[in-house]
Amino acid sequence: MSTQFEHRPDAPTDASSGARPAPSVPDPAAWPGLDRPPSGPRTAVSALVARRLFAAAVSRLHVTVHGVGDRPLGLGGPAITVHRPEEFFARFGRDALIGFGEAYLTGAWGEGAPGAGAEGSSELGDFLAVLAAEMPTLVPAPLQRARAAVVRRPPKAHENTERQTRGNIAHHYDLSNDLFAAFLDPTLSYSSALFDAPQERAVDGVGELLRAGDPTPDADLESAQAAKIERLLDVTEVGPGTRVLEIGTGWGELAIRAAARGASVHSVTLSTEQQALARQRIEAAGHGAAVDVELCDYRLVDGTYDAVLSVEMIEAVGHEYWSTYFRTIDRVLAPGGRVGIQAITMPHDRMLATRRTYTWINKYIFPGGFLPSVQVLDEVTRADTDLRLTGRLSMGRHYAETLRQWDRRADAAAEEVLGLGFDETFLRMWHFYLEYSRAGFASGYLDVNQLLFTRP
Image (cartoon, rainbow, N blue to C red; front, side):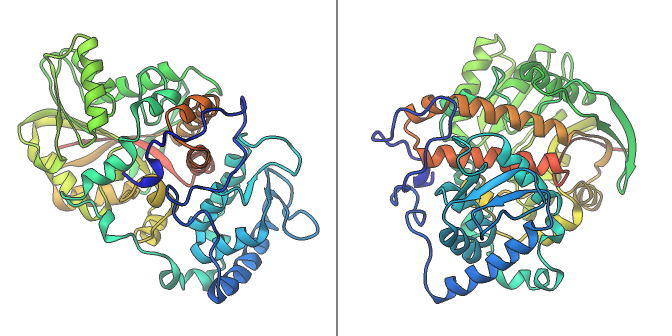
């Protein structure tokens, strides 16, 4: 586990009700590199370039940026304030989008207009959504062609080999079960919910799909999480006697619901924290005899299963191992079996452009993570397995609403999180992570799909 997430007994144990804690200098032992901005001649040049690119980009967007120059930048819209411009552009110029996020963690910039009160509103996500919608064109084309020369590559230590994957998973999922319980609903589902909304049929480059309409704001999250799981169980025809393999246990809700239908479930995870709590929840629900939760890499799974289910786990596989992941599923799937995967996806062209990029999300949230496109999952399964993509439900805006509710819950639980030993910088990081993610789905830059694979 990275040192910045270790529980520290000397961390503050109070926070202003409903407000993001005021930024303080990050502890260099817990947050190396955040206690002071980068400096030197290279940083000075890159900061100057970043200032010019940033001003040119936001000036044509429907946002408002205070604190850069004599007057606000932008065409009006969600507002941010740059509190310390020199630090903001030093970090942004030196480390691109990683530095952009780190400057938020240190308080060099934040949401809202000057004097507008405590930060912590959803305006951050609204601002980032405008940027995400324009992501392919924010940087001039000539500079985009030089991308490969300036972006950082993922560290070799983040590659999801059998030896390293467990550490990558532990970095996030073994933070604290109490932390996740503080902002998730009672099902402890850490993936997109499916709210009640009309659905329409559409066609894209991979064929026919269902597209879920806009969810109702503030709809009940717990019932929407249950609906997401029940739909996956329905399309994979899980019922009495079904042998189910679940790749990625979470905290056990899918396994509980599958067992309640009369299925036997073998669930595998690499998170010791999740395994322990999932087993407790499964026993409490009365399904201990029907469900086995094993600490096991998906590559090592044996047996034969009528249904294979995996909810937002493929994002942690890494593009180098997508073929291995699907070949494993193909190997253990019984004749006539069905595969249900819920996957966060991105456009195919953006996936190709970013698959060797080290991001803020990789550094602080999901080391080794990478999002596929629907197209590449179709291509990989066609090339390397007998599986075929035969059903899809697109529901990206439902993830935007899920994340909005999570962020609101996390903000309300700030005192509880500080009491667990996390610090103010962690709270800002978590808020940025949730709103940064929400922006991707709200803008349409990201999507989440329930995918059904069968054998012809």
